[in-house]
Image (cartoon, rainbow, N blue to C red; front, side, top):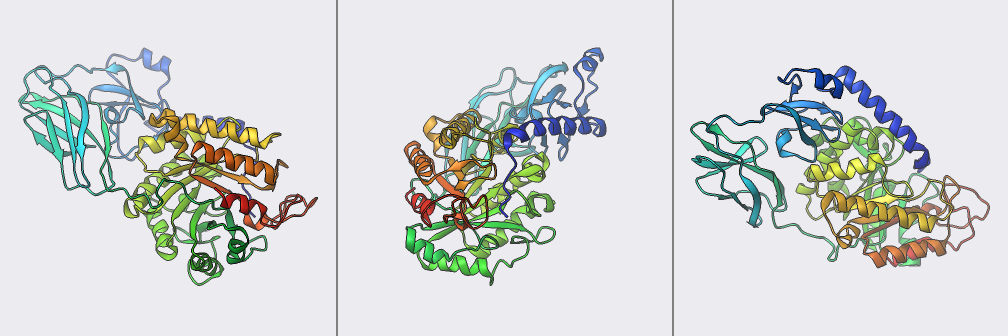
Length: 487
């Protein structure tokens, strides 16, 4: 019933082919599709690329014109106001073409835009003076002007606590306005970490609609575990959330289990999505609608963590849906600063595949405040699950460092591992001893989340195969949960 994934080593080839087909379809059907390089070279000096537009899907390599210059999409995305090509170098690079020369007499672009301070409701900025005659400077957030000044500094006030903003600045005089400076992204003060030190308690998945679910209170008493990841929130039709797509948010078996956990002093993480089922990401039409559906669950359940299990072709490999979820998570975090936001996705033995890398880089480009990136290191045909898990996690670390400029320690502190106990769908073997090795490694590196699939399967049944209510191996009942409780 968990129905996680087919092996990602096989999916990698399929994903590459799918991406190529998607890009080809976009080229055939969109006026903003990529322009072949040889065609571009044959064009006249006047650019024939379509003007950049907000709310438009652009494939990797798409060409647009903006502000008299041509730009090429670095990665596929759906544009939004404020994502003009000069403002988001993570999405666009300037290429040959167009006429980037400013109008005569217009000042040069300001340089070295940076933050000089911030509070819970303001951000102070400074920059180097522009060349030429300058009457003043205007500070922009996307296309909206936020400040105007005669000097080389300004403070933008009236902001919300723990909100992220990206600014550019332009010089102006009577002849016009300069090109924009490079962008700077700043988050206001006031972010609250609900768990000092950042580490979330070990929280194995518990699924109340499958696999002879145990009493969570009994498992807590037997193992010392204090948290569970409750699975799964799906669509019950349209953008309406429900447990497994058919059980009510309140009053049912899931709500009763959560009440047991909280009454015993524990907490819950709520998982949205998974490998199969009718999910909210494809069904909610906008980021705002998606965030509204998530808010219904938060209001009904009161979780410490919301976990977005982004998998399969409908969410993980559909970049429009990826963007919708990511933009929705910005709203969720802004409205619930005390609730941690986790994204969970599959991996190869060496780290995230192309869709995982895209998710990480797009989250950075969109300034989504994700607390933890969790990989699922199984179902890729591993012969040494410990070594492959470590290698996959190191690949995730390197991807996070590249996207954010973090140190090793900073990247590890935003990482998690979600394993599979006993036999996986691909017959990989994780014994209790191996799971302890993985747990100890995660603790030693400072990872902040640990989970596995699932408590329902944390019972011995040697020779039982891959089934919903036991691990398929010889083990004591709740042995994996005891180890996870020590995280």
